[in-house]
Amino acid sequence: MRRTLFNEDHEAFRQTLRDFIAKEVVPVHHEWEEAGHPPRDFYRKLGELGLLGIQVPEEFGGAGETSFKFSAIASEETSRAGVSFGTYSVHANLILPYLMAYATQEQKERWLPGFATGDLMTAIAMTEPGTGSDLANIQTKAELSADGTHYVLNGAKTFITGGALADLVLVVARTAAFDPADRRAGLSILVVESASEGFTVGRKLQKIGLKASDTAELSFVDVQVPVANLLGEEGKGFSYLSHNLAQERLAIAVGGAATAAAALRFATQYVKDRTVFGKPVAHFQNTKFVLAECATEVEAAQLMADRALELHDVGELSVADAAKAKLFCTEVAGRVIDKCLQLHGGYGYVTEYPIARLYADTRVSRIYGGTSEVMKTIIAKSLGL
Image (tube, rainbow, N blue to C red; front, top):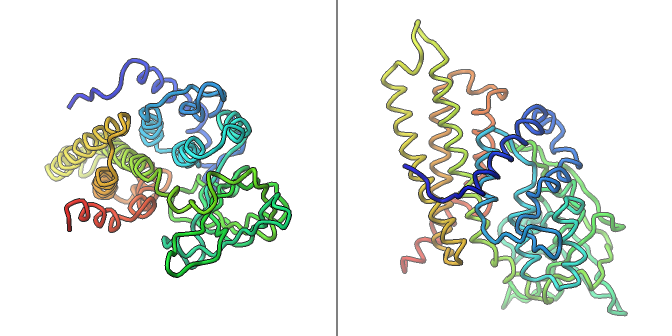
């Protein structure tokens, strides 16, 4: 079906991005996977390309674009090439909305210009060892100094995407004593500079996939954080964390549809080139039927992701609709990529083939941003169940 989501400006941006990926990413992506992340200067290249600042207001050096469609194109083009931009999506799609919604004018002037150029890369630290998704049980503490000029931060975080290279980390910490009657109260978000004394990047976690995106453990020992780095109001951190969930899940849904489409593309080309028993694999009826099923599912996922994008751009994407899009698109991606890998035979299990990387990278999409089970719970609630 013909897509009507993108205009000429979007397609021109897509071509620029496709050329950039072919030149700057594809030839060296395997090196990034071995290192566990792209080189730090790569993010400055994304800044020069304008990608990091697309949604940053013009007064802070960005393009001032309000549509999420450009970010969607970045997801589609990296998936198409079987590569990634490291922690770009967390930086641009997850953290920027927090800064736009809760940062003061002074904070925006301090942080957003570097955010757009890639000179200040960001991460967000919520999850802790032993707490998992139970954010109300956060143990990291930040106590206000006697003179009221700074917080003293102590604690540990884990599964922090981009934590190894980040210059600024949004840390969710408890600034008031734990109240069993209201477990969500007393949490605040502090923007911590990674150069701060007592801030330590610990173990870099070895993952099944997303090997070009660093995931680290962080620790804080008597880290002094200026009160000027408090994001929003003290004690309202938990409510802030739910602010961007719809966009976060939309980004994952778009990624799911994009990876499924990429897998279909890789498999279709492979079965045309690969011969078995003297015939192309594409000749066999089973191959045709499997790819026909995949093409249909990809089309459905794309339609759902596109509709969710349109709703988001006009401010009408509900929490339940975002959950439906994430659930459907990531589950489709899992099924389609598995079938497409099977058609590659043994080569599908070799990481030099992009289908193998897609298989490993996509699995976590049914976990982060809220598991598929959590999405089903949200959808059920919207049905009055």
